[in-house]
Image 1 (cartoon, helix red, strand yellow):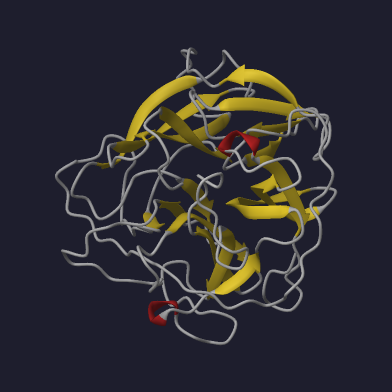
Image 2 (cartoon, rainbow, N blue to C red; image 1 turned 45 degrees about the vertical axis):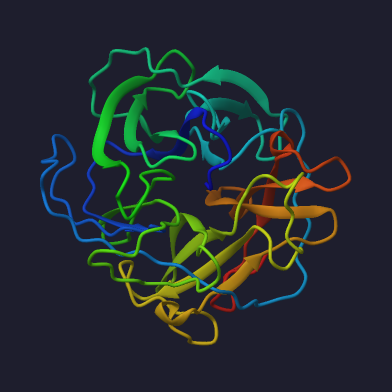
Length: 339
């Protein structure tokens, strides 16, 4: 998420798992970490990282409309969805102070605001539901990715397990936000995180490169389908549309590259290496939908895979607080994601 103001916030990504281990990571500052343990970590340990940035190539010029959303569907950014197996209730987590929680009986609603994660539990059990969160001051690089757990995801049941050891400050080549745990089919655990950086000093290895301006790429999300790993991310700035709007083709949008490996070798649909400016457009502005991004992929039992994102409805307004929940079915039948 690009900086717009200076408020502190938690940026959530959710995963159900019996324990938390990070073996690698890829960043947008997409950094690539090789780790053997989660907690505690040696903060002085040398890490190797990969920072990717991209340009754009689209698969299609038209996109399907988002599914209808009822209930509390506005003022939500960077959403992650999960379905509780015990009763089929859907939970939605979004960027905001202490991470707001919403629930609904179906994927599209009626969404109800429940409260915040605000860790207050005390359970140390290595089971249940885990949420990785970023604590950050927007506009600065003082950030950290932490983890909280809950037996049922409801407010008041979350335990704060503090930092994962992935942190950033001024001078880092990455910003420790937008973390997302990804578990490969071979049970390798990966964490993607970060957004665009401004300092090219140091030993940096790009897996994708955006040659425009400040190379604004952010919010990496890995998804495995068939023989490929798909690296999704958002390009350009997500905010400030009231005063600064790009043309729809140049604004905030969802991009992708793919590779047979989760840790490198990503190319776009034309075969162009992401280290050479390659990338493929998944979802851009169209009609009254402007600036879609902050994406995640959710495997819904009834809908199969869906793309989850936020956007503004131009018939309502461009304010940052007007971001709405967007959900589109995503199809990989041609080998690339189409919505």
